[in-house]
Length: 486
Image (tube, rainbow, N blue to C red; front, side, top):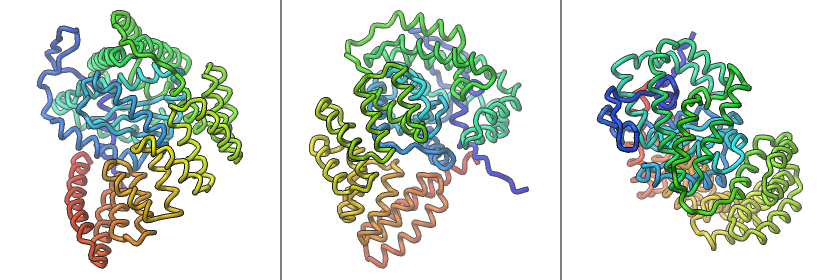
């Protein structure tokens, strides 16, 4: 039987946030706010964490289904930017990964990778509840729980993690909680050894998250509500709760601690509305229930979403059913009523693009970019539409976009196509190589660089040749990082 390679880097980082794989230093020092101090427990440097986190992300993209929605991604990026200065991670470059999975889950990986399942939008009925999960995950990152756990793991049973990775990989690839439960069962003793430490880490991340929420203008009581809802879910689902509750168990003591701390925090005076969140939630539910769109409408109506968000969902549903004119009419009217919501005209441009109305998509996205020149969703829509009308313009736009967004696989995928259509073969193969390495196919990416070099030599494109050589060195370094934990 051929041996499957279960790469340690693929799941080591996610496991660092799980109940079986978190620990504090043995001293358990406490600061003036009651938080355990970081101490000097790990030899893993911040730079190494960043590199390992990016290696993990590449493998995760290769194994888990992605939800490619630039509008939602941009929204999440703005939430992270709002929370980060208050979460002690303001200097960390974060990358969002959206997972096409309706299960309740979110995770944070060393190096600033934050993952969110589409199912988290379905579960969290208001923005505060949703933000509480992000704030908690940023708390894990800010306190460097992975690095602190590694210090202990290296001293004890780090090799024992390998047996657990198989179950974790099954869970990530769609095997569900059964794979995770199998892995947990096979490592029961190891898990028990870690459990008391994991509870401390969860509490620490809660405290950081609560403080960040209050400082950013969110009511920290929302975290308490979210925990209580999760606890009810765990009771209802018995022995088969979603992965988030397996890796972030909600105990009575944790809930009580969060309640006590939330009641002591002063919230920054920032007016909040759930309208934008409701609209993002509409996108998530429309995606989750794309085969049965009426279920999305029923859920949002039952959960008292704002009327504007319900009309937005109606437009998305119309577009999904092929009623493009009606969808665009609804969105144009909403844009008049809500001129500050950029997602409305951009959603219309996206619908026009998907309906192959390329000229309309170009006009709509360009109009929005006059007001918001760097609005990434509009740039992506414009570039994809220009592929059909002006490949050179698409190539120029995507060159700029990928230079500022080096972790954007979709951008490089479009760039490869634009370069091929506009006669820039060297750059096209280079963009394809970037896409391959970003999605975990590093060896294929290195081979693609060789093809890019040959094409650039034929074209005598010295700028492309210089870039290709530089990236070859980088790709080899990426592979070495990924190989560390195979």
